[in-house]
Amino acid sequence: MSQEELMPINVWLAGRNYRLRIKPEEESAVRKAVKIADEKIADMRAHYMGKDEIDFMAMTLLSYAADTAVESFGNPVVHSELNKLSNKIDRALEEKAKK
Image (tube, rainbow, N blue to C red; front, side, top):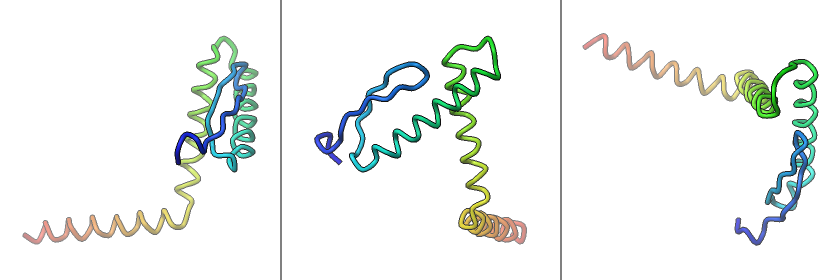
């Protein structure tokens, strides 16, 4: 997608203004994600005193990444692919042991 097809938007996150260029059809999803992230940062700020905004943003990012990683392991497609990969590794090890 070319830069001309992207629209600029301004969002506020953790009290700071950020300018993004996004696809027009993604605007509502991006704004919702920013709102969720801002709420999570505010929650972190309320529970962990003595940190700065960078710490809160990093903690929020880590929390999101961990949630996403855990959810992906519950995905049946991921389980299936991991099982296939595990079986291939087992077969390769068995073949190597026979030699």
